[in-house]
Image 1 (cartoon, rainbow, N blue to C red):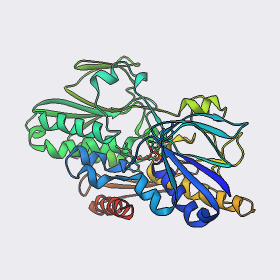
Image 2 (cartoon, protein in one colour):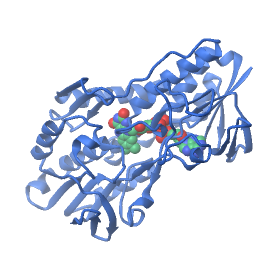
Image 3 (cartoon, rainbow, N blue to C red):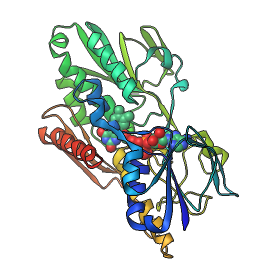
Image 4 (cartoon, rainbow, N blue to C red):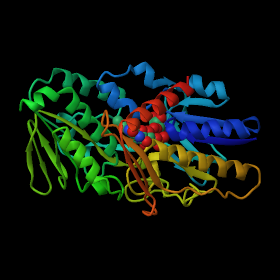
Length: 375
Ligand SMILES: Cc1cc2nc3c(=O)[nH]c(=O)nc-3n(C[C@H](O)[C@H](O)[C@H](O)COP(=O)(O)OP(=O)(O)OC[C@H]3O[C@@H](n4cnc5c(N)ncnc54)[C@H](O)[C@@H]3O)c2cc1C
């Protein structure tokens, strides 16, 4: 019986756990380690902030879910990987010690590097967690007039919630925006195409922003936030009354120590999702050192590839499944301006862009399906 250890209980870790449990669970011990007992459906955090759903609808108990499929859950955080001994040091309520693995799957998501922008912690809201989203929602609720700025910090890899937040704000304050009492601005550190991994959607997205009276600023790499104003490394000074920024993304320092990460601590893998320099190990999701934005659907597809290859290994076959890096996302503009984008980051000949009310609705249906399947 082999020990399969999965680090992380988000989209990537959960899908790997499900696939492995179904295919090889009877003959292997599968353990998933995660510091949070809760799975959070991040794509719905904008809706949570704007009170369009309850926290209980977008989170569920991870231990219960894993118990049902025969996967052991350990509440804890991975601190260190010993490649020679093939162990991971874990700390947490369930264990303080080492777990040995024959096969490892890394799915720990990214680290939010709020410290790369001076004053972020003190002055900016963000959306990366249920508490943070509700705090921002409360600040929006209390907002009466002035400038609201939403944006991406440099090296942040999450453009969709920034755009969706801007559209949700524009809808909420439509009357006050028309009366010149509220101003909404979206800030990107580079170009729109850079934020979306090279995809060209500025024509449609800019038209939608303009229609909803949302101002857009490009090439504003924010590096210093103070009360009521922030600065960029390109000498901009911008005033705000309410600020929501997605922090910079980094990998996790524990992987640097193991020699399997790039200079930003993202884990290096090949297109079979196998980790460079560590045998029988896979990595999936936001922690992977692939270029471009990070999306849940990528984590899910990478998890499918990793699981199939790992199952092949366990069956004595050669892993042969390849991952292809592409974006398939909906930017929900709350109506006819919603955009569906399908774009090949590794091959820009794949490019499809559609617009219409249907796409916002399709995203809602897809989100509801994802949440329901996990209950
Ligand atoms: C506000 C918001 C809106 C979004 N909107 C969309 C969208 O519309 N469409 C889309 O496709 N994507 C969207 N995303 C992105 C998507 O949520 C992520 O790409 C996805 O969650 C990545 O999955 P993951 O499994 O890699 O990481 P996560 O889902 O972050 O899971 C990581 C897991 O690892 C655990 N962990 C962390 N550190 C350790 C450690 N040291 N040891 C063990 N476990 C650890 C965490 O507790 C967590 O369980 C959005 C994200 C946010 C925040």
